[in-house]
Length: 335
Image 1 (cartoon, helix red, strand yellow):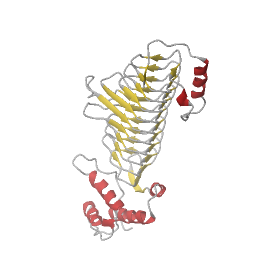
Image 2 (cartoon, helix red, strand yellow):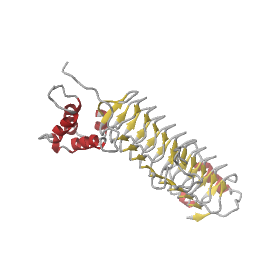
Image 3 (spheres, helix red, strand yellow):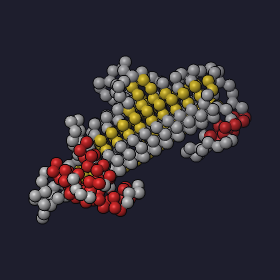
Image 4 (cartoon, one colour):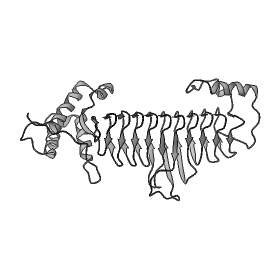
């Protein structure tokens, strides 16, 4: 790591050529072996605090700001007019597009992993919008690796020192999304434009939302689920399921998503059978919802299929003491 001194010197011709190459029309330039030959460099109009810790091969464009507690890993790129504030750490080869803001001068910390892209005018790791937040409390944001956070997205730190906002790896968060304080996101999720998550929402892995989705605080979205465009969620979405609607209702299983993720025909068939027993029974003697769940758990064949057990457990978790219950499902009759 290289600690930057206080005085910025004019760029040499060699550095100017390197700067031109780095801030090319390519959205993200791949780090090559040639790049390693060049030291870090910054445009004369950039303001880089002398206490900031800067890795090798870092590019800092015009009118950028890097605060005194910032740490930038090797190969990071700051496009013109992007800023890093507060106690903020960027891993290797992160990219801040024009206008992006990462971190905040607040107690606490923002940690961004490696190979992340922060889009145009995105705001990541700033003060939450919870009225219970106290300025003296530490607040935290942890982001994993290989996430693409697109333009105008906002991601807030936690609301208290005992909590964290967490985003895992390989997530695509499209334009104008909002991830509020204390949310917990897993891996490989896709949030389409204008997906809005209120505080304390939990999203597991491989979930997919269409555009303009609103999620109530404390909801849980299970793995491999799909949420239709324009949906409003006030309850949980169990694993493997598909929901949609102004007040989202269960619409069946996310068959296409399951196939794309490599689930076998046998697994999907078992899941379909279990879903029908729980949610689509036409037998007047089928019993209560709890009895139908128990029937699947005790079924001679279904009880031994891991994907079915996982779905049933996901449903049960939503009805624990602090759970919100699951999205409404349509009651079927024999007609």
